[in-house]
Length: 346
Image (cartoon, rainbow, N blue to C red; front, top):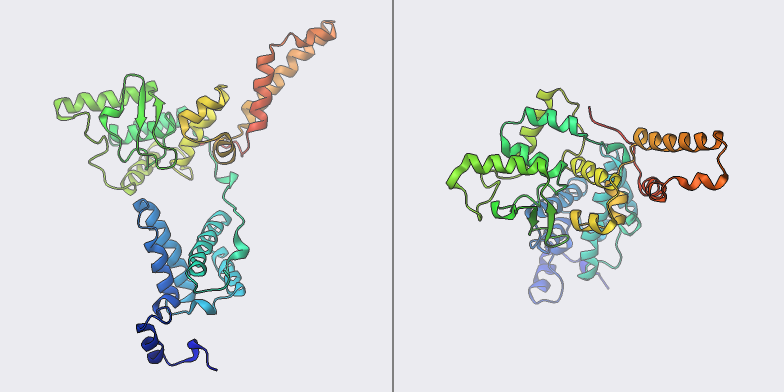
């Protein structure tokens, strides 16, 4: 008995019209990618763009007309090897896991018995080498060369407020800036929350309001004249070059990371940090908190000197505990929580 796939295409299409088999289009790779993309139409435009890119990576390697049943685990391994030639490990991992999701859709639809990407579930999504701590001196230098206060505000919201760029500023309105805080309504990850209105941010938003006078309303979008994040990136990268500062990777993510690192070093409670940044201790430790080696080791050595002075003064062993327990616990917790390279942009 011949398999359906072995029949001529015109015969398959005839059977397909009667609903006896799935459409031929759904069995080729381009059809699968399109079908999966349709399930993501409810997501943000930037997320949809990413999903389309993952599918394009598959199509570029395998071809639009490749039958999905012909793609086996060995082919998936070859695809990964191909990606590794030009991309870093975290990007390769991200693409492979999304291809896993695409083919999982085929399995759920009954088009495949098993997923050829099942062996690539492991997540490689952190790269400490790309973490850079952006200190205040550096960000102020860049701000001096920004085109206008809108660009300065965006930098300050990321560096001093720890906001996610662009998702948490795209819908930000003037009315969201209250006397002491910034209301974040449109964070699809964590829901609504309030961020303290730090002085660095307050000064810039007040200048923008004063320059607009009566032209702005509480419902007006703060960044309403800007479309997309690409324009911001171009202008801020231009300001970075003009300032003479070394360009850092992950432009906005490292600004948020630097802000979170500052707040952790100041010793705020985990609940306070959860509320401010809309993430958990585990997420902060894995993706954001940076280990600033020089600063932390200086603190360790300072405490060591204090202990040595006590011992040499002939103090009783119990006197060693005269150092406030809060200081010691804070030091211990900061070292346990952090990881990274401790690089600083300059």
